[in-house]
Image (tube, rainbow, N blue to C red; front, side, top):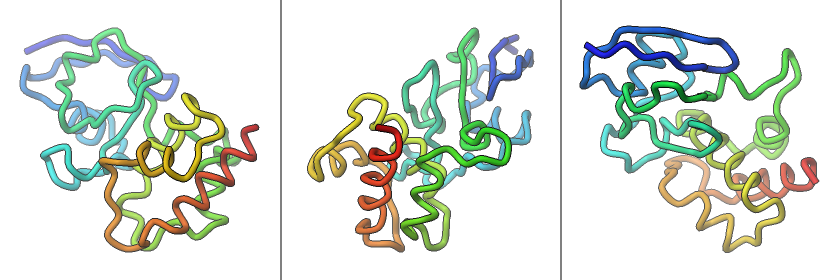
Length: 154
């Protein structure tokens, strides 16, 4: 067992976890943050994307023990009270979701992309969202949402 301390969405947590516990399982099963989805368990789909110390990571490929001392932000930590984060609002406004399963990971990947590249081209958006799969939308409205969020955050 490993004893870890981390900050998730602004709240400090200390937990004992098995050495093999994945970050996604810590978030969902130990902390009750089920907005982070488990899609493929092989890091192919991106549904489990969260921010660890400001970087987008796939939480199904990271051990919980690796985030000891880290700051984690999940989809639940993006909004400010009742006000959606600009990326969340853009996904809503642009109808960039259908079933919604990929949406948390897409939003987290988009927020990280716009942090690193505030005004991405279409090609940079495609590249920035590689590894986050959507089986419903065809990506057109997702790209529109990224562009709207970029304008809002400008």
